[in-house]
Length: 192
Image 1 (cartoon, rainbow, N blue to C red):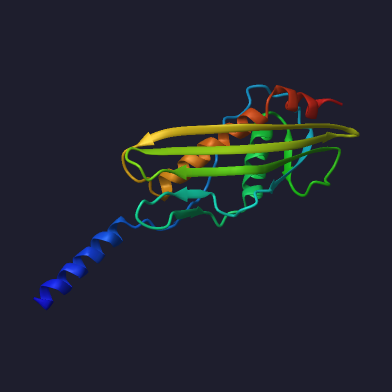
Image 2: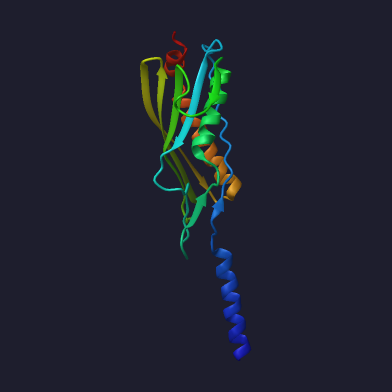
């Protein structure tokens, strides 16, 4: 009798452990589409990025039976965004250098103000990712600022793994960057 009781407890523990969600470490690699226009003509732009989010976590995986699992990354989001923006500017005909904000006549700083990825515990699971970006561009004494929000939603039947969650974040971040680097900003940076 006692053996059956202990075996029941052991099986229950194994089943509950199988339902528990653990934190996920995401590796991000946003790849925005490049601008069609090429107004840069080799002009040099100093690009920098910053992560101004109040929390380090990227989001959560909800769990009905225990604590929510946290989604994190070891990557520097500011640097990641700066590299993606520099690639976009190079495709637009600029010579983009990733460095600090004090680097020449033409400067562009992009700041991640908010990034949230949320996976619900209900089945089907609701996946929602939101990003808010801001920028400050300088061309000599002139300054241009802007801000945008981009979001993405999906419904899935299973629990997304780290790779799938990273893809959601990458796509949303890339979409936000594409919206940020519009013709107005590129033209501003290309002006004499």
